[in-house]
Length: 179
Image 1 (tube, rainbow, N blue to C red):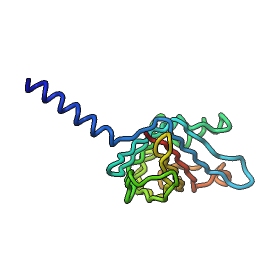
Image 2 (image 1 turned 135 degrees about the horizontal axis):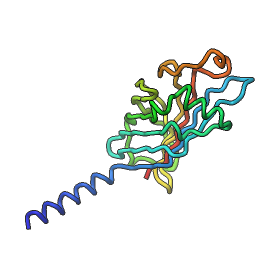
Image 3 (image 1 turned 45 degrees about the vertical axis):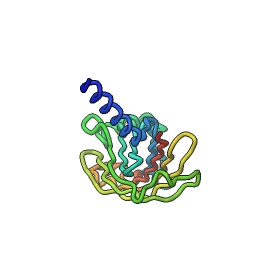
Image 4 (image 1 turned 180 degrees about the horizontal axis):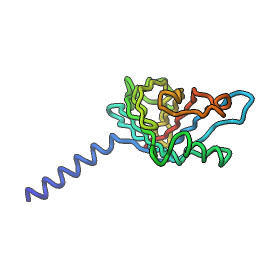
């Protein structure tokens, strides 16, 4: 009888803890490293995982590098083989916290929150701070943020032959609806 009671208590506790975690596996990350007057250097990944702890504001995301799609297949090939080395560095991760996050105060009107954390990409980890617009929708909690990273900070070398055509400053947009 004690084992049954303990098992029921344990599963109930886990279920309650799991309710704090909100997740998506269909988040979107778009990045752009375009330079004016040259071919657009832009890619999108629609299969990004994001987990939000609605009680603590902790947030984490994971993007597989081979999930980024470019307008041109050759750009995608160069990205994976020459820049990111996707076989050696298959993913990018972010772990951080949304400051002063209170999920119970969210409304349909987006509010600005500061997200601080660490972005690991290409074997390097750096601090990232961004402003996110967060709101409650019928589909869940929507999080949209824009920030920039420097390729140099992640030891991503841009070959000299295309240095004038690819920006070292990469604009990143992340969009998640967690539930």
